[in-house]
Length: 142
Image (cartoon, rainbow, N blue to C red):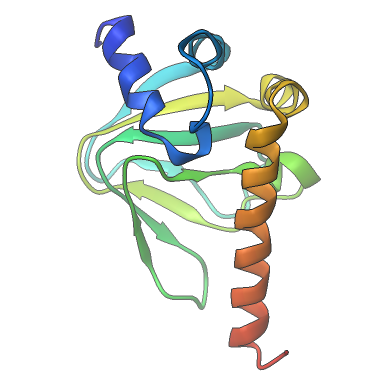
């Protein structure tokens, strides 16, 4: 495991956390658990009941949504927010492509994070809106 200072620096590079002070970043870090995943390890599966939100701090992971284009996630990307927020099942499978370090925050603490730091919630809403627009565009809706 890395030092706390190294973990704070990695978290500070996550665009979702931009604008938070070192003290606030430390608080966010204390809400989660830093996990490691080795290449080929499935991090989350389609259909799983969501209990956690993840932010990638290091490494690359493959995001696969049934009948959609596969994407590669890297440091600063995050996933799990939709299922945690609406209580629905996971809609994507995420698999480590390289050695991955991720911060996992459970549902209760993630909701507390959103309540405490409005800027984080706004950034998530913007990203979710982009995803909905992209999905609507793929369906031919305007």
